[in-house]
Image (cartoon, rainbow, N blue to C red):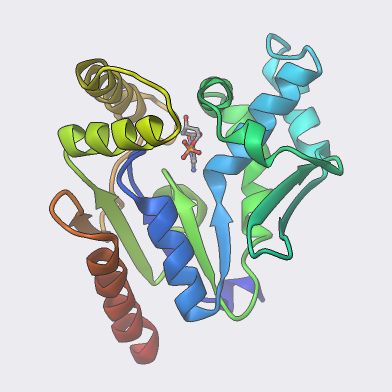
Length: 228
Ligand code: DC
């Protein structure tokens, strides 16, 4: 049944703007949204909180399968993420949680455990799935696959601004180096490396606004799903 539900995947490196674009596109289409990075963050956070960060992958995977995760929208329209009934939205966005997530994301057992969770998001009327391997591994039959990218320099500038707005001072050069290192790790890792699906449409957002990118993806969606 779920295979008949349309899926639009948006993959790409961090800082490409895919989270923002995925949310806007899902809202415009009235479809569900899967933020798959949040799932890896939840597993990393839960493992750390339970003192299981160094546990064997099979035990971590069993823990991941047992997590009770809920994505909600509060009365102000903000997304809230609950882990075993506790609101962990703020904790999930920290750099520390990003590190915990990337450590569990390299484990094939964890990727396998999260596969069913991700497929569960595919419900009518449709799904916009945001991540690194949505078009290549999780939803290979998606009708529209977008690979959103931006130059490392531009992504470092965006991150720098975000951190500055939060009152955190970091050098732009250090951020650029960090991003380039992470790109290399992500695209060279053996499990689910970051790369565009063979049938993905690649969009470089370096010189585009969020509105430009949203408009382009929505045009592609109209062409794709009206035709299907
Ligand atoms: O997009 P993000 O920063 O929330 O992702 C957190 C971590 O999870 C990051 O290290 C990449 C990894 N990830 C992944 O391996 N596969 C996905 N589909 C989504 C995220």
